View 1 (cartoon, rainbow over the protein chains, first blue to last red):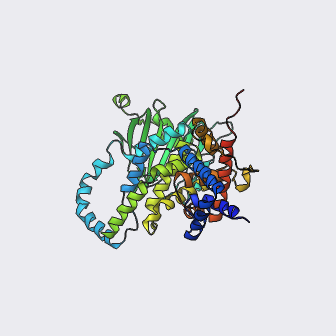
View 2 (cartoon, chains in turn brown, red):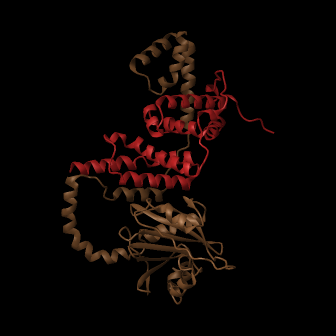
View 3 (cartoon, rainbow over the protein chains, first blue to last red):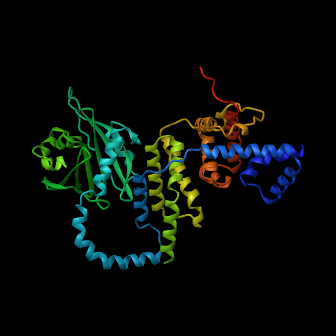
Length: 281
Length: 173
């Protein structure tokens, strides 16, 4: 094997700065006396520069940057005793203040829950939010969420009577980020239009909306944004957000969980429609 | 105080990787929405992780490793065909000389198309090496493969890209 053969094998790692000192000195000593190998290094170097210039650089959107920033700004786990003690002291001092303003914060418009529900619904409708589990079987989708979200998801099902058509279809689900944790996103379709259900732990996020309706012992929060109606509420340790197009009829979207004849009776008379002036905003 | 300073250092280093991670995610998924999901999930996991890289200089390859693992798991779930080194087929022999053509803009476009057309396993090492400047060892860490595999994939990717430049423009009909 000639010196040239040995050196040519090292040209790429040489240009990539991957050679140890001895190898690098060997290559450089050879290049000083070999014009052919110098030409090869020049060609390879040109190729590397061209590849570097041709590689597309993509800039993260402002929205993504903001989301990532919001994760970063949250308290990180595992910071150790010093930070834990400091957090405890601060927590006690700040506790009363937080308690005082908690109600206002939780119901402020534009909170993460509604924003994430709207964003997820719109992206899913545009085909930009791929489902991680695709199934029409509520049991299968519920099973997929087990262990992936820090709460139990049980999607309801009801038997269809012979000859009866199911008027909505479960499409599947996926995880979405919400308040530094995961929420369960479940996609349904009714009359060809998507309906999105977001489920999160009530300790992670609280329902919010511009208007509230009390029904069946629960408080439903209503918000119209980006052409969607979003209904949010908490029940038995979970917080839900249901998003559907404006004009679809918020109560109709409730049928994805209350579709059986018995369940339908529970939502009769429920009108989660915000006042007209809210829709016009 | 030390923990707080370290936490802030970690945060600063992690957020500085955003564009690089997003570019890598686009090159893997070829879809901006999926790339955003990958990046978002990467950061979510990174900030929630109890064990951070030590020393913090390792944050960048660690984040790329998380993103690559997420992507690989998605591919597995979607039962997408995995690519290995053999997918490149027969490689061209000889040593074409692309240097004299490099100044021409059409070469850059052709090279870009050639990078896009690279088999997945080659494209990711090209992006990590030439786009992100990772060392062979760091790429091996990100991709969970031996450094020798990184070197061989890079060598074959270079052959393919060199050949794309040497081939010249497609004949016009």
